[in-house]
Length: 333
Length: 198
Image 1: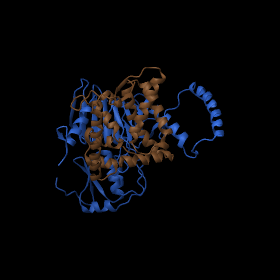
Image 2: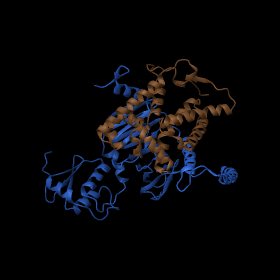
Image 3: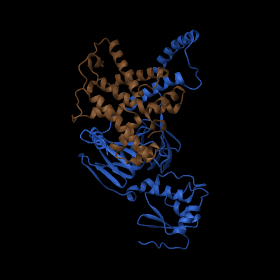
Image 4: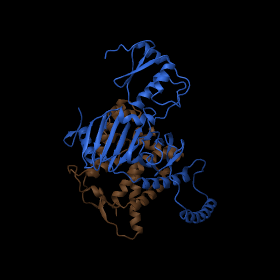
């Protein structure tokens, strides 16, 4: 039997208290960065690799005094220099339709990226913590840190992958709302007068002031400019998600099992896949892929890969059905 | 999420191990320390410095540097965050002493003294209690009770089994409850229960 606390079962009391209190106050990113930098410098000085530790001798103290004197001069000089370069928080992984960015380019904290204006394009970033962050066309964001993106307008998609390679979560701030994910695929769109969160996988908490609303897979939250918040069922594939498929980084497939490829395809498109019969499933279970689909679109990839394994496909009710050669889908509809 | 699995285990053992690894110059340990303790310490100081950001940053920088300097003296007798807070209090007191300002004495629970557990305005108290407990516990509780994750999802994020995650959440609640009750308790008006905060 569960323990009681504050007049209710303990777990229920704790849940209510945390929900009433809301999330803890966020620490300003530039303050955190400054503290971490100072702490790292002190830690490296004392415990950094290759440095001897222990009580300093008198000769070392003399040397330290000389170094300190020199350091005072250096500090004065350094302070008159421009601010240090901000740390890299992401790299450009894929560019679609625009020549303004180069694949592999580093993106520093505080950078603003705008896919509006100039040649239209979409951008795929790999955050320092491993998450994939994608920008639709006509999108303007600021990368506040490796774990937070500020969306000014347009749409951002975040994918933190699946365990055990799950990446660090990336939150999206849009106006006064913070969308805090919990291991997920989701997109936030700011356009016109509304902000919209759509969750494909996992959960995302929308935090405003002291309140929060959680959306799970297949749900969406719409925040109107008058502050009204609506949570409702939503799609995990289809029109709203099409742009995400165009930005998917195509992985190497050499030595990958067909089943793994289909899992990847299903996550990227939000589509289910199924086998028409046991023969198709058996082929998929034993087929190992060779070659590359680097220059193939996500739309064309399943056709090319399945035919190389002697399989066929059809789409029914938004799901990809894998068929053995010469067979028809005889599953009940 | 926890990049360092050390922090998903028992807090006392995990903190001793973390400190040992910090002393050994382990880069991942520094990242884990930095990620899981600095924000809580910042909030702790900010509450005691009238929300003065600049001063808070200065005090926390100074505290963390002193803690790193004294790491060899940490024996794990008190939780790491409690130790950090004690050092931070000293830094705050030292700052006002150096500034020549007459310190104001307040109750041990400081800004929480007037907030009883039944008071609906317990936000600060709940946040302070979360900052006091093991960061792994606090994070797991937020995932479960604030973000609404299922236990199985918390388990996945921590690399634990379902049962182990349930057990961790149970220990987290117990730690939270103890921290909350300690903070909410109004001490008797005795000199021993005073500390200098400003």
